[in-house]
Amino acid sequence: MNNLNSIIVEGNLTRDPEYHETAKGTPVCNFSIATNRFFKQGEGLEKEVSFFDVETWSKLALSVQNLGHKGRAVRVVGRLKQDRWNGPDGKPRSRISIVAEHVEFRREFKQDESGEQPDTVDDEERFAVSF
Image 1: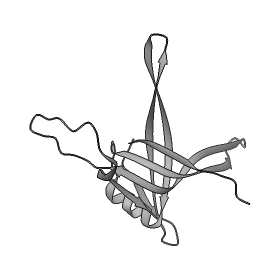
Image 2 (image 1 turned 45 degrees about the horizontal axis):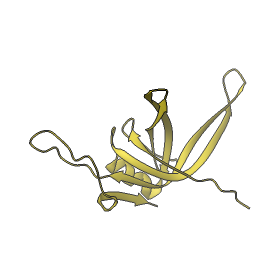
Image 3 (image 1 turned 180 degrees about the vertical axis):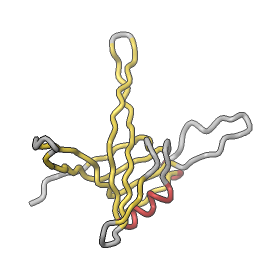
Image 4 (image 1 turned 120 degrees about the horizontal axis):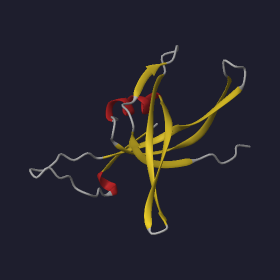
């Protein structure tokens, strides 16, 4: 029986997505996101930034390749995956990444004449892609 393995994370792409195909021609698109957490520390407000690697497959990979770019706000729904290998020194290594099942990009707005952008975006103004 499968155990629960689910994650939802929001943030911004830290780089443009990287697209490639497997030897069998399956589309794969990888990207990373930064997510911010603010918390009170004494009298001030502290910021903690976490970075996550994300992989997408098939039709979702094609959509991410076309819609994603560095800085774009995104919500990712997926599962955690652990890769394990032995390093050049023979010691075991491990890396955790997110395998996306759903990627939701925030709609982008053009700046108005004053150079400002709207502060908020309603849920119905989001663009979502799934596989």
